[in-house]
Length: 320
Ligand SMILES: NC(=O)C1=CN([C@@H]2O[C@H](COP(=O)(O)OP(=O)(O)OC[C@H]3O[C@@H](n4cnc5c(N)ncnc54)[C@H](OP(=O)(O)O)[C@@H]3O)[C@@H](O)[C@H]2O)C=CC1
Ligand SMILES: CC(C)(CO)C(=O)C(=O)O
Image (cartoon, rainbow, N blue to C red; front, side, top):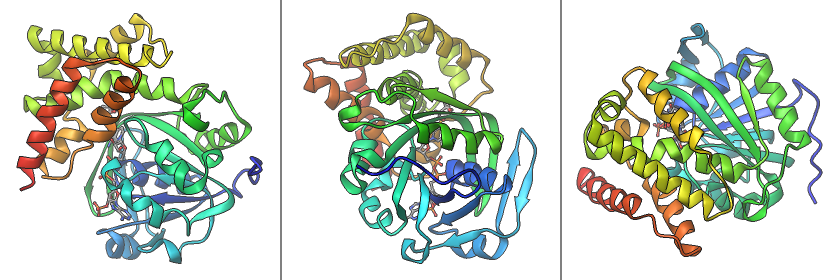
């Protein structure tokens, strides 16, 4: 069993796999707080190696003129905490990207939307070395090494156990939460990562999906009676999917998500932004995997299935 003790504060070395809206923002905040952070980049490598990172944030802008930037994981030091902030559509790269960077008793933290990525990563690094985080943030990469954080910012952090068994709050979770807290990031402790992932889908399934299919921002979707009713039906199906996995989502939480969306600044979801940029959509993580998991326990989610089929069609046609 991999020891779960991690080095003391500020000694924990962080890697960020995917320095975009999420990885770029949270990684920069950790470096700003004094942590040793190493960024793996793709197209932005040269720019960030030479110019560092620029963060525009509702909580205050800052720049990091120098960061540890890499284009190959083999050139990176072994790290105690490896944050994966790729789009889930790039997770097929993780068997190549992760092993060179994860320290012997290190842990991988998946800051991604959707369901199922922890099970995939557990196959690579072992199921006792995986955690997941749900990011309640509106952030966009607006240029190479340039992040704009426009709203919210909290992370709901959970430890992973085989087959998504609830693992409770672990020491290493609290240690990493302490680091993020030191970096000014609000951490919500999750005792049950699977429940947290289903809860995040209560928002992502209706609004990410409908924003693409109906070419609409969140404010238009919630303001129109027909699409609000459709969003509520989709949310209820997510609640049914969670219930099929013995995870109860209270009706109050659904109402809270609806109320939050009414108050939200008009927002183009990350999936809609990907669609407009002709990038692959995170359909399998956010729609396909929840449908598969529900079907495995004999539960159909018909309206989510319809959204999934439409999104698959649109995604294919969008990138021909
Ligand atoms: N943005 C947001 O506000 C929120 C996002 N999320 C979730 O967070 C996750 C990350 O999304 P987000 O940060 O928005 O996505 P981004 O596209 O902004 O960031 C992903 C980054 O990964 C990089 N990347 C791709 N391939 C590689 C590679 N082989 N090696 C190194 N880096 C690579 C990309 O670089 P390049 O572009 O050069 O390929 C990009 O900078 C998703 O699951 C998303 O759904 C959740 C809540 C809110
Ligand atoms: C809820 C929201 C809009 C911000 O956390 C999100 O999850 C997303 O943009 O994918």
